[in-house]
Amino acid sequence: MKAILFFLYALSFTLLTVAHADEEKDFAQAYSQYTQALEKGDAKAALQYAKKTYDLGMLVLEPDSESLLAVTDNYAALLLKKGDSKGALKLYKAVLADNERAYGRYAKSLVPILESIYKIEAKYSPKSAEDVKVRYLKLLYRHNPGEIARSMDEGVLPPADNVSDVAADITATTGLSVKTYEGDHWSILFTGNNDEGAKIFDQQLEISYRSIREFLISANLAVKPLDTKLVAILFQDEAEYMDYLKKKDYLIRGKGSYSERAGLLIMHDNLSKRSDWNFFKQTNFITKEALQQVAVAANVFSTTKTYYPLWLYDGLAYSFEFNDIKQPFGPHTQNISSTNWSRAQDLIDNGGWLSIQDLVRLDNLEEKEKSNKEVLYIMGTYLVRFLYEQRGDELIDYLLLLPKQNKNAQKSMYREKAFRKAFGDPEDLDKDWRRFLKNEGIELKL
Image (tube, one colour):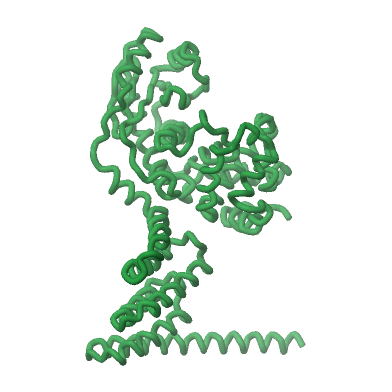
């Protein structure tokens, strides 16, 4: 019986392979006939073979194939020439649906298809064109953030209005003399004769800014560029840094921090460490603080107005940890620190990994428990990446929803309620979540 079943399977596979080969041959022949008809000026025959090429292309070509889009364009152009805009739209929408089924609703291959649909809708049905335009632009920004940023960020930004006031305040508070280093996006106030340190600090900030800016564009959180430069302070050593923070009553963090209240990124240099490895590590750290400053300036985040769940806030920050400093990094890229992978697997192996529902239910008191620190950081990193990749629109809805929460929002039930309002039942995410983690090399236990 097994032998018969194997024979039938092998026969059906062979027949399918032969049939597919025949369809590919027919496709090539139909395309040749289409081009010949065009050359002869035979519009009727060209339309006939364009249709045949399109129908066969839908069978033998991958949904995201440039060839499939080309034969769709060919057939649609002839239909539009006939005045059949509905027929042309039907073609593109069929290709769009195939792409969405195969690659998801945020696939790069959707961009040119949506552009074609928009052009037709704008001409023949302007009212329905607007929704298509919005989706097209969102995906265009999502997949081309670097190009969009470069086209919008031309020109020199003016220094922030308060640079001289901040410099005077540093001197008045600490008695230290202050110099200014003007970078592309930051005015850096630095103490001592640390011109070299200020220059290196600016290089690290600019590396950070590039990826932060691209993420904000790709996530459709903030497309508009900065109006003025941001302000950063670089103290010559840790003692100066600590003295300033204590006297100003700012939050004290060892390596450096961003103060939203002051609008300042405050760091200290370590003059004894000048190496490629230190530059790499310091840039990884600086990015997490610079992210907050840029996001606040872009009106995306505000910790003074909103209390963000730590899985989201820290998860977003740590998803900017990278392996390759020369490439863009952040949730919108695959350039993620390899240490996160090993720490995630350790959490799973040690039984510390939580369900999505349990993670998003953690309240503000549970977040402070030492036992939850690792899971908030690691799971948050991957959950932010997952939501950006597969639930991008819902992620924006969630970020917009959080500032509207009342003071009870830090309690478990309200946190889960907000998550459900944006993303639906956490359990319904489980299948996609497991598949996403598996693609990241992380295996969850059943």
